Amino acid sequence: MRDGAEGDFADFYEATWSRTLAVTYGLTGDRGVAEEIAQEAYVRAWQHWSRVARYDQPAAWVRQVATRLSVSRWRRTKVAAAWLARNRSEAHVPPPDETSTALVRALLEIPEAQRRAVVLHHLADLPVDEVARIERCPAGTVKARLSRGRAALALLLTDHPADEPNGAHTHA
Image 1 (cartoon, one colour):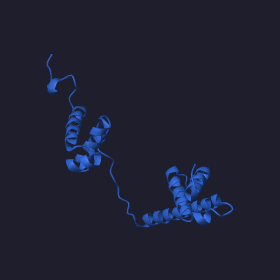
Image 2 (cartoon, rainbow, N blue to C red):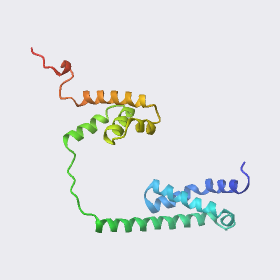
Image 3 (cartoon, one colour):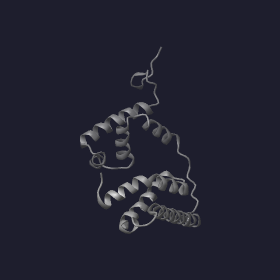
Image 4 (cartoon, one colour):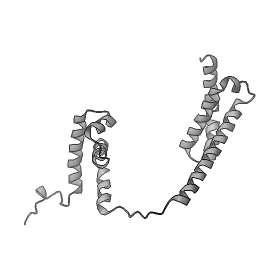
């Protein structure tokens, strides 16, 4: 059992969260954004809990705050989109070439740990020590993943069929 203001607030939160989330989701149409906005409304309620708790309907106060936050976010998004529309020049970006497409397909075929190591080191141009820090593993592990990943990619990206040893053509 919870005691004091924290306990009261926790009980209030559990009892009202789903309805507040439903309101914000209905307003935003995006579950992640709705959760973020609802959480912000509850943060504000907690900051003023000694006053909000005495209201006849504290849940209505939280939903009102969430609604206002949703509208504010919508307005900011609308203003930003309008600014981008006015100031962005249309840049034609060509579709990816066959090599890029083949590389991405091949990357999706190798184990995830190897893929992350290869992408971070070779595509993001991070040193092995930085990849190790990001991956939270020793540098030696990253080097092994890079070696295995490159070997797997070489097999996947080769132009030679697998039944030809070392890519040499056999004569019948």
